[in-house]
Image 1: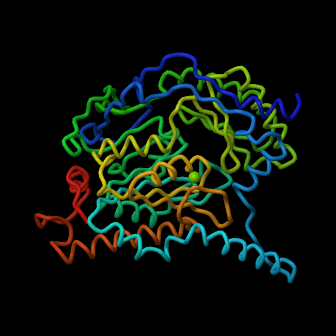
Image 2 (image 1 turned 45 degrees about the horizontal axis):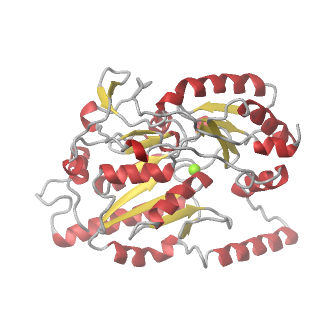
Image 3 (image 1 turned 135 degrees about the vertical axis):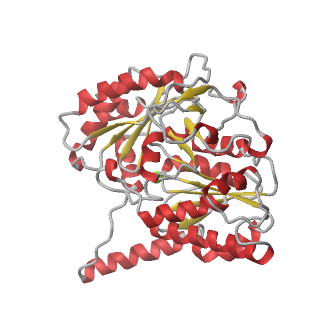
Length: 411
Ligand SMILES: [Mg+2]
């Protein structure tokens, strides 16, 4: 197979009608009373999507370079030469930040813009709340980051949007008060029934514990296909050392972080050979990962919009969504947030990248710092006007979180 053929295999067409249904979930510890969703008009749901040659890079070299650029190696200066290289990279990064200013240095400006508005926080997981690690099963969330995200969710509607399976992300994060959108937003579940007067009308199901739940799963019809493709990929890549297939319910990931670079093309060929038989699935790439998902018009940006609508915040001029992510798949969300009257899109990166994000932040530790600042700002503002945690004098507790979400307090 030629390299150009491999690239062309990222091709996808959705050719059959689709309806949103709900499947039994593998497990969840979120009580049913805290979960809601709302339907999306069918005409807003997946239509046809195709990836053409240019979208996929045009040729393998370009494709591989793009993958490397998504996950640049760390600099370890240990000699004059490496110090020179480090300086050059630092200069390049500094030049890049002129167009994507570090958000930590822009916090006052952001908060000025946020005054009187309801802030909503959307967070990617891998590379944003946890460091990128060799073994994707070990991308654990640090306790202090968990505590920080908990604090954020105490004061702001907060969602985690990941390419991973929703349940997997939940196992890492373990905060039931958050919204979760797994599988690139194709598997959404969130707290609070009756948010801003909204009544949950989605399809009900039961989780492993037997709780009634309601979720929104716009790609549920693809589950058998994803199951099948995952099994084939497992079989076809088992002899490539380090390759790992991750089943994310409505999408799949082929991790090659632990694959020797000389085997990347071979792995890509194997994946592409499988994909050519499934034109209703799409193939994209992220940070040393190939992503396979239904070729429907649904992405992280759509998920953000859906969640904002669920909170009654989509069309308000008094809403300021903040989205933080590190990956190509976060670009759709950046664009969505940028398209709102007020919005703050932040790319996590230690190296210059082509991005739609308005701002930059270097790594998860800076993300934690930013989230701390956000919480501090909110607490300070509330202290100046009312009691520390609520308008009726109650201390903020996890149970108060839902009240905050259902009745947003203006900043
Ligand atoms: Mg990420």
